[in-house]
Image 1 (spheres, helix red, strand yellow):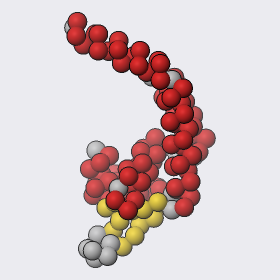
Image 2 (image 1 turned 30 degrees about the vertical axis):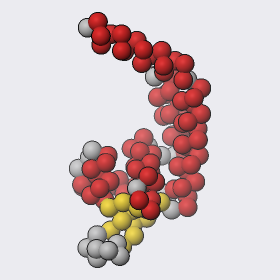
Image 3 (image 1 turned 180 degrees about the horizontal axis):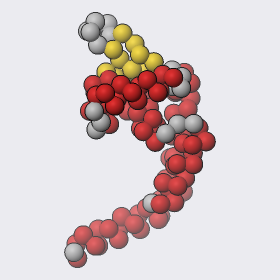
Length: 121
């Protein structure tokens, strides 16, 4: 697990995004129409609303996301990915999936050990 986390941090650093930003990009991508309200983003990421607002500010400043006025609710703003955000996310997701598959035997072994410990503990 530590090997994968070290890989992840290096990959994210190389791409110029933080772990939290990557997680936010993933949340936005899987939302309906790849757009999400800031309130929903905060809920999905288990962070406070004002933290989500600041996170979206940083994503916008990096050119990864943009705010979109909601057609359905004029008081709401949606967050979507820019083309650059899509590109960064796709590249990182591909690299992360490859690393997970590469480390699959170790991950399976670690999970089996955890199961054993939980059953004997």
